[in-house]
Amino acid sequence: MSNISHFSKGVVVTLRSGRLALRLAPLALVIHGQLSHSLAADSVLARLDVHWLTDLSARHLDSAPAYLGLLLAGLVLYLLLAVLLNGGIIGGLLRPGARSTLAEFFHDCGLYFWRFLRLFLLSIPFYLLFAGLLFGLVAGLLRAFTREAATEWPVLVASNLRLLALALLLGVVAMFFDYVKIGLAAGNGRSVLKETWRTLKRVGRRFFKAWGLYLLAGVAFVLLTLLYLEVARILPKGKPQWVVLAFAWQQLYVLGRQFSRILFFATEIEFAREEMFGAREKKREE
Image (cartoon, rainbow, N blue to C red):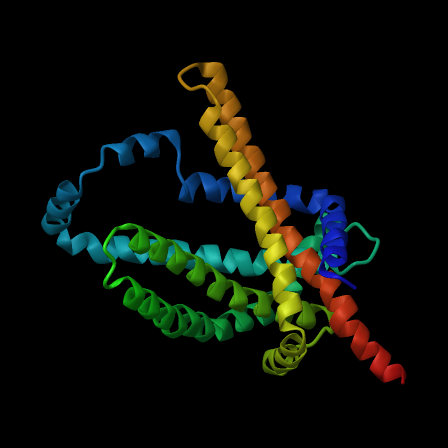
Protein backbone atom coordinates (compact mmCIF):
# COMPACT_ATOMS: atom_id res chain seq x y z
CA MET A 1 0.00 0.00 0.00
CA SER A 2 1.29 3.48 -0.90
CA ASN A 3 2.06 6.20 1.61
CA ILE A 4 -0.78 8.28 0.19
CA SER A 5 -3.19 5.49 1.13
CA HIS A 6 -1.72 5.22 4.62
CA PHE A 7 -1.89 8.99 5.01
CA SER A 8 -5.49 9.12 3.77
CA LYS A 9 -6.51 6.43 6.25
CA GLY A 10 -4.73 8.31 9.00
CA VAL A 11 -6.58 11.51 8.12
CA VAL A 12 -9.94 9.69 8.26
CA VAL A 13 -9.09 8.15 11.64
CA THR A 14 -7.95 11.55 12.93
CA LEU A 15 -11.17 13.26 11.86
CA ARG A 16 -13.16 10.51 13.57
CA SER A 17 -11.13 11.08 16.73
CA GLY A 18 -12.50 14.57 17.31
CA ARG A 19 -13.52 13.63 20.85
CA LEU A 20 -9.93 12.64 21.58
CA ALA A 21 -8.65 16.00 20.33
CA LEU A 22 -11.23 17.82 22.46
CA ARG A 23 -9.93 15.99 25.54
CA LEU A 24 -6.40 17.11 24.80
CA ALA A 25 -7.33 20.68 23.92
CA PRO A 26 -8.12 21.99 27.46
CA LEU A 27 -4.72 20.86 28.76
CA ALA A 28 -3.02 22.26 25.68
CA LEU A 29 -4.83 25.59 26.12
CA VAL A 30 -3.61 25.87 29.71
CA ILE A 31 -0.03 24.94 28.77
CA HIS A 32 -0.08 27.22 25.73
CA GLY A 33 -1.40 30.10 27.77
CA GLN A 34 1.07 29.67 30.61
CA LEU A 35 4.21 28.56 28.75
CA SER A 36 3.77 30.27 25.39
CA HIS A 37 2.75 33.91 25.31
CA SER A 38 -0.03 36.34 26.00
CA LEU A 39 -0.82 39.92 25.07
CA ALA A 40 0.81 41.12 28.29
CA ALA A 41 3.89 38.98 27.70
CA ASP A 42 4.19 40.27 24.13
CA SER A 43 4.14 43.83 25.47
CA VAL A 44 6.88 43.02 27.99
CA LEU A 45 9.06 41.21 25.46
CA ALA A 46 8.75 44.08 22.98
CA ARG A 47 10.37 46.40 25.54
CA LEU A 48 12.85 43.91 26.98
CA ASP A 49 16.42 45.20 27.26
CA VAL A 50 19.35 42.78 27.34
CA HIS A 51 21.48 45.20 29.39
CA TRP A 52 18.70 45.46 31.97
CA LEU A 53 18.59 41.66 32.21
CA THR A 54 22.37 41.59 32.71
CA ASP A 55 22.21 44.12 35.54
CA LEU A 56 19.29 42.29 37.14
CA SER A 57 21.03 38.91 37.04
CA ALA A 58 24.21 40.39 38.48
CA ARG A 59 22.32 42.07 41.33
CA HIS A 60 20.23 38.99 42.18
CA LEU A 61 22.76 36.30 41.39
CA ASP A 62 21.88 34.29 44.48
CA SER A 63 18.32 33.76 43.26
CA ALA A 64 19.40 32.38 39.87
CA PRO A 65 19.50 28.70 41.04
CA ALA A 66 15.95 29.01 42.36
CA TYR A 67 14.67 30.36 39.04
CA LEU A 68 16.60 27.69 37.17
CA GLY A 69 15.11 25.02 39.44
CA LEU A 70 11.57 26.30 38.75
CA LEU A 71 12.28 26.28 35.03
CA LEU A 72 13.60 22.72 35.11
CA ALA A 73 10.66 21.59 37.28
CA GLY A 74 8.21 23.06 34.77
CA LEU A 75 10.01 21.35 31.90
CA VAL A 76 10.01 17.98 33.68
CA LEU A 77 6.29 18.27 34.48
CA TYR A 78 5.55 19.14 30.85
CA LEU A 79 7.50 16.11 29.58
CA LEU A 80 5.82 13.78 32.10
CA LEU A 81 2.42 15.08 31.02
CA ALA A 82 3.31 14.47 27.37
CA VAL A 83 4.38 10.90 28.18
CA LEU A 84 1.14 10.34 30.11
CA LEU A 85 -1.12 11.66 27.34
CA ASN A 86 0.66 9.68 24.63
CA GLY A 87 -0.62 6.52 26.27
CA GLY A 88 -4.20 7.76 26.07
CA ILE A 89 -3.84 8.80 22.42
CA ILE A 90 -2.25 5.57 21.21
CA GLY A 91 -4.55 3.39 23.30
CA GLY A 92 -7.61 5.15 21.89
CA LEU A 93 -6.40 4.89 18.30
CA LEU A 94 -5.65 1.17 18.66
CA ARG A 95 -9.31 0.42 19.43
CA PRO A 96 -10.71 -0.40 15.97
CA GLY A 97 -14.16 1.05 15.39
CA ALA A 98 -14.64 1.98 19.05
CA ARG A 99 -14.90 5.39 20.61
CA SER A 100 -12.97 5.37 23.83
CA THR A 101 -14.68 6.89 26.81
CA LEU A 102 -13.00 9.34 29.15
CA ALA A 103 -12.46 6.54 31.67
CA GLU A 104 -10.81 4.36 29.01
CA PHE A 105 -8.64 7.28 27.92
CA PHE A 106 -7.22 7.80 31.41
CA HIS A 107 -6.98 4.03 31.87
CA ASP A 108 -4.70 3.89 28.82
CA CYS A 109 -2.73 6.86 30.15
CA GLY A 110 -1.98 4.98 33.36
CA LEU A 111 -1.55 1.58 31.70
CA TYR A 112 1.26 2.66 29.39
CA PHE A 113 2.79 5.43 31.49
CA TRP A 114 5.66 3.52 33.08
CA ARG A 115 6.56 1.73 29.85
CA PHE A 116 6.53 5.01 27.92
CA LEU A 117 8.48 6.73 30.69
CA ARG A 118 11.24 4.09 30.51
CA LEU A 119 11.21 4.50 26.73
CA PHE A 120 11.50 8.27 27.07
CA LEU A 121 14.56 7.88 29.31
CA LEU A 122 16.03 5.45 26.78
CA SER A 123 15.44 7.95 23.96
CA ILE A 124 17.41 10.78 25.60
CA PRO A 125 20.88 9.49 24.52
CA PHE A 126 19.59 9.08 20.95
CA TYR A 127 18.32 12.64 20.88
CA LEU A 128 21.66 13.85 22.22
CA LEU A 129 23.52 11.78 19.62
CA PHE A 130 21.49 13.07 16.68
CA ALA A 131 21.26 16.67 17.93
CA GLY A 132 24.86 16.76 19.05
CA LEU A 133 27.21 14.60 17.01
CA LEU A 134 25.35 14.19 13.70
CA PHE A 135 24.02 17.74 13.65
CA GLY A 136 27.50 18.98 14.54
CA LEU A 137 28.91 17.17 11.49
CA VAL A 138 26.26 18.70 9.20
CA ALA A 139 26.80 22.16 10.69
CA GLY A 140 30.56 21.79 10.24
CA LEU A 141 30.17 20.91 6.57
CA LEU A 142 27.88 23.88 5.99
CA ARG A 143 30.33 26.20 7.74
CA ALA A 144 33.12 24.91 5.51
CA PHE A 145 31.09 25.70 2.38
CA THR A 146 30.31 29.25 3.55
CA ARG A 147 33.73 30.13 4.93
CA GLU A 148 34.83 31.85 1.71
CA ALA A 149 31.41 33.31 0.86
CA ALA A 150 31.58 36.75 -0.76
CA THR A 151 28.01 37.72 0.15
CA GLU A 152 25.62 37.05 3.02
CA TRP A 153 23.30 34.86 0.94
CA PRO A 154 25.27 31.59 1.28
CA VAL A 155 25.48 32.18 5.03
CA LEU A 156 21.72 32.81 5.22
CA VAL A 157 20.96 29.68 3.19
CA ALA A 158 23.34 27.62 5.31
CA SER A 159 21.67 28.90 8.49
CA ASN A 160 18.25 27.78 7.22
CA LEU A 161 19.69 24.45 6.13
CA ARG A 162 21.10 23.92 9.62
CA LEU A 163 17.67 24.44 11.16
CA LEU A 164 16.13 22.08 8.61
CA ALA A 165 18.81 19.45 9.27
CA LEU A 166 18.23 19.69 13.02
CA ALA A 167 14.46 19.28 12.56
CA LEU A 168 14.94 16.28 10.26
CA LEU A 169 17.43 14.57 12.56
CA LEU A 170 15.21 15.01 15.61
CA GLY A 171 12.25 13.86 13.51
CA VAL A 172 14.01 10.58 12.71
CA VAL A 173 14.41 9.87 16.43
CA ALA A 174 10.84 10.93 17.24
CA MET A 175 9.44 8.74 14.45
CA PHE A 176 11.40 5.69 15.54
CA PHE A 177 10.32 5.92 19.18
CA ASP A 178 6.72 6.54 18.11
CA TYR A 179 6.79 3.10 16.48
CA VAL A 180 8.30 1.61 19.64
CA LYS A 181 5.36 3.06 21.63
CA ILE A 182 2.90 1.61 19.14
CA GLY A 183 4.61 -1.77 19.37
CA LEU A 184 4.50 -1.72 23.16
CA ALA A 185 0.81 -0.84 23.17
CA ALA A 186 -0.29 -3.11 20.32
CA GLY A 187 1.64 -6.13 21.55
CA ASN A 188 0.98 -5.35 25.22
CA GLY A 189 4.67 -5.92 25.83
CA ARG A 190 6.50 -4.68 28.88
CA SER A 191 10.13 -5.07 27.84
CA VAL A 192 11.15 -1.72 26.40
CA LEU A 193 14.56 -2.94 25.25
CA LYS A 194 13.16 -5.95 23.38
CA GLU A 195 10.50 -3.87 21.67
CA THR A 196 13.07 -1.24 20.75
CA TRP A 197 15.23 -3.90 19.09
CA ARG A 198 12.25 -5.40 17.25
CA THR A 199 11.16 -1.96 16.06
CA LEU A 200 14.68 -1.17 14.89
CA LYS A 201 14.58 -4.22 12.62
CA ARG A 202 11.06 -3.48 11.35
CA VAL A 203 11.61 0.20 10.67
CA GLY A 204 15.10 -0.45 9.30
CA ARG A 205 13.67 -2.61 6.51
CA ARG A 206 11.09 0.06 5.61
CA PHE A 207 12.86 3.20 6.74
CA PHE A 208 12.43 5.41 3.68
CA LYS A 209 8.77 4.52 3.30
CA ALA A 210 8.13 5.17 7.00
CA TRP A 211 10.13 8.39 6.85
CA GLY A 212 8.19 9.56 3.80
CA LEU A 213 4.90 9.01 5.61
CA TYR A 214 6.20 10.90 8.65
CA LEU A 215 7.17 13.81 6.42
CA LEU A 216 3.66 13.88 4.92
CA ALA A 217 2.21 14.34 8.40
CA GLY A 218 4.89 16.95 9.09
CA VAL A 219 3.95 18.89 5.94
CA ALA A 220 0.32 18.90 7.10
CA PHE A 221 1.41 20.43 10.41
CA VAL A 222 3.57 23.05 8.66
CA LEU A 223 0.68 24.02 6.36
CA LEU A 224 -1.61 24.33 9.38
CA THR A 225 0.89 26.60 11.11
CA LEU A 226 1.40 28.75 8.00
CA LEU A 227 -2.37 29.14 7.63
CA TYR A 228 -2.65 30.21 11.26
CA LEU A 229 0.18 32.74 10.96
CA GLU A 230 -1.16 34.22 7.72
CA VAL A 231 -4.68 34.68 9.07
CA ALA A 232 -3.32 36.08 12.35
CA ARG A 233 -1.23 38.55 10.34
CA ILE A 234 -4.10 39.91 8.26
CA LEU A 235 -6.59 40.16 11.12
CA PRO A 236 -7.12 43.84 12.05
CA LYS A 237 -5.85 44.89 15.44
CA GLY A 238 -6.80 47.56 17.94
CA LYS A 239 -10.55 46.98 18.21
CA PRO A 240 -12.15 44.80 20.91
CA GLN A 241 -14.12 42.65 18.46
CA TRP A 242 -10.98 41.86 16.48
CA VAL A 243 -9.09 41.00 19.66
CA VAL A 244 -11.83 38.49 20.52
CA LEU A 245 -11.67 37.06 17.00
CA ALA A 246 -7.87 36.77 17.18
CA PHE A 247 -8.17 35.00 20.54
CA ALA A 248 -10.74 32.55 19.09
CA TRP A 249 -8.49 31.91 16.09
CA GLN A 250 -5.58 31.18 18.42
CA GLN A 251 -7.66 28.64 20.35
CA LEU A 252 -8.73 26.98 17.10
CA TYR A 253 -5.07 26.67 16.18
CA VAL A 254 -4.35 24.97 19.51
CA LEU A 255 -7.17 22.51 18.76
CA GLY A 256 -5.76 22.01 15.27
CA ARG A 257 -2.38 21.18 16.78
CA GLN A 258 -4.02 18.40 18.77
CA PHE A 259 -5.53 17.00 15.58
CA SER A 260 -2.06 17.20 14.03
CA ARG A 261 -0.59 15.36 17.01
CA ILE A 262 -3.18 12.61 16.58
CA LEU A 263 -2.50 12.52 12.83
CA PHE A 264 1.14 11.57 13.39
CA PHE A 265 0.16 8.60 15.55
CA ALA A 266 -2.81 7.63 13.33
CA THR A 267 -0.70 7.45 10.16
CA GLU A 268 2.04 5.55 11.97
CA ILE A 269 -0.47 3.05 13.37
CA GLU A 270 -1.96 2.48 9.90
CA PHE A 271 1.53 1.98 8.50
CA ALA A 272 2.50 -0.40 11.31
CA ARG A 273 -0.65 -2.50 10.85
CA GLU A 274 -0.15 -2.90 7.12
CA GLU A 275 3.62 -2.95 6.74
CA MET A 276 4.89 -4.36 10.05
CA PHE A 277 2.33 -6.19 12.16
CA GLY A 278 0.44 -7.41 9.08
CA ALA A 279 3.60 -8.92 7.63
CA ARG A 280 4.37 -10.56 10.97
CA GLU A 281 0.90 -12.13 11.15
CA LYS A 282 1.19 -13.46 7.58
CA LYS A 283 4.57 -15.00 8.42
CA ARG A 284 3.05 -16.73 11.47
CA GLU A 285 0.19 -18.15 9.39
CA GLU A 286 2.63 -19.57 6.85
